[in-house]
Structure formats: structure tokens, C-alpha cells
Image 1 (tube, rainbow, N blue to C red):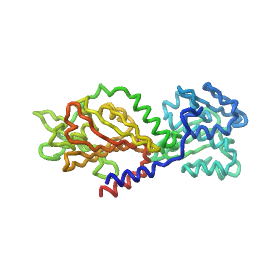
Image 2 (image 1 turned 180 degrees about the vertical axis):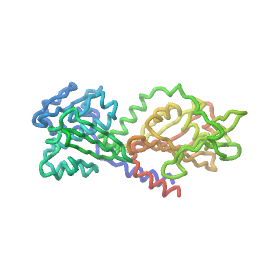
Image 3 (image 1 turned 45 degrees about the vertical axis):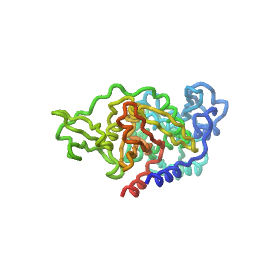
Image 4 (image 1 turned 90 degrees about the horizontal axis):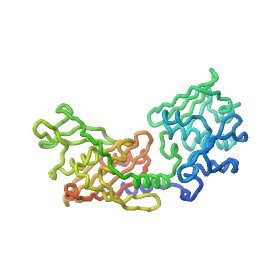
Length: 376
């Protein structure tokens, strides 16, 4: 099962080579767009500047990160405060996309960019790339501010709508795809995640147990009760957690007789022993596989806010437990996958080490059918 899964994951992760850390741009997409801009405008300071040859009435935002790399280029459509209220990555993407569609000048080129990323752009109901009189540059120049703006997520796509001049409406639709919205390719995304994990210095110390009552629980196995969670693609991959009753109190299972249930609780809720750690081999783009150790709680707390987490376990007859952990991003269509293959004893050792391989930034639509095929 695992060998097949790894081979397919490695196949779907192949992406174009990305620029190095010494580039003046944080990621390759920005370098591609910047090639169309006057180079004397790409200074070392954050600026929002008028570039008449790009847009007559709209400004261009040029922003940097703490490494002095340009990490945002776009037609300035939102204030920083508005971005934080709406959705900063999505607002940044919209600005960057609009700039890209404007600078290429050629409407056929702009259409190919949109079609490649499954983007729809309509003005007053008409496909803007086939509009007989308008193009995106003209529409943006004529968009009076403040325009009424709406952003909604419908399934796995976003709808962005501007209403202005009482009779004008610009409608943008695009997939909730991480690589599209963030602009990073696979290598860049893996490197950024690795850096963030290395800077994640401590686990959440504010953990409090989820309150459960008898009505929340169902029989599972012997004296073990289950709190049914949700599933990912198939029933075998789920967010179920497990409890036992001690006097009148329900407690999370942590018992050598139930290693699968115990490990699921460690991952989905909390590990009661802060010294038990993961020894992770991070399988990144280009066969780069750094190894690091991190407490279970520290590693899991890093992901809890932005990801739904699911587990699927198998206990072998060799004294080992094998668990797949799926991290599904709540906003964008991608996952991380952690494969645990470790001795059962490591779950209960006071200073135990749990061995795992970590595959990051996997497009979500390439995984679901695969899991259904393997587990059924």
C-alpha cells in the first residue's frame, strides 16, 4: 500500500525548477511579471507607484519581505487593512493576477494565462477575453472607487465581484488552489514550510481537553468509546478520537492495549507526555530530505489552526504501528501527508521517538482517488 502511494506522490510533485534564495524576488512568478515592468521602478523600498505605461489610473504595488526580496507585485486594489479583513493571500493574488493580465498586453496571451489556471473573467456578463470593445486594462482604469467588492468561496473556487458606476460589474472566478493563489511552485512551497517549522520553537501550552458527555460517544471496542469525527474521502481516514470512562469522567485513551486509538489521540488531541517526539524525514522537492526532531505537540500545534487533520492506522504483527496522517488545508486545495512507521513501545516510552516520513504540499485532487483505490 505505502509503496504505491509514495510513487504516485513523487510523480505528482514534479514542478518546474524555482529560483534560488539569492534572487531579488521571493518566488519565480514575480520574476516573470517583473520582466514586463520598467526596471528602474523596482526599487529596494516598498512603494505604491503610478506607472502610466502599465495603467493610466491605477497604481502598482511593489512590496518586499524581510530578506529585501520583492514578495508582492500587483495592481493596487485593496488597502492592507482591507486585505486582513477579507483574506490577504487571496487579495494579493487578485492584485498580482490583474497586473499580469495587464502587462502582457496581448489579449490572446492573457486568455491563455487564464485558461491554464481555470480562471474566468467577465465584464457585465461577457467573457472579457472575447469582449469586442473592452480589455482588463480598460475596465480597471474605468473602475471608480470605492467600488462595491464581494468575495465568496463556493465549493473549491472563489468568486470575486466588483460593482461600480451603477451599471458595471467585473466578475472573477478562480480555483481555491494553493499554487495559483500563493504563486509558489512545489520547491518554493516546501522550502518555506521547512523554514517555518524550524522557527516553530514551542508547542501550545494553553491546551484544554475537549468537553465530552455520554451522549457524544458511541461504543467502539470493549470499554473504549469513540467520539465520531469527520472523514477524508473514505471512512478509513477520519478524525475519530477515543475515550474511556474513569469514575464519572471521560478521559482520552492512552493505553498500550490500544496503540491505534492512543496514537490517534496524540495526533488529533494532545500527547500527555511532552517529551515524546517525532523523528521526521521531510521528503521535499528534488530528493532533498532533511531530518529533524520535534515533539508531537509542537509539530501538531503548528498545523491545527489552518488544517483539518485525519488519521488511518494499521497495527502490524511485528510490534509496529503504521499510521497515515492527512493534513487538509481549510482554505486551499492541498494536503500534507505524514507516514508513521514506528515500534508500538515508542508511544509509551517516557522519552519515546516516533519515526515518520513527511510529504508536503500535495495537490488534494491527486490524493483522494488514490486513497479510495488503496483502502477499498
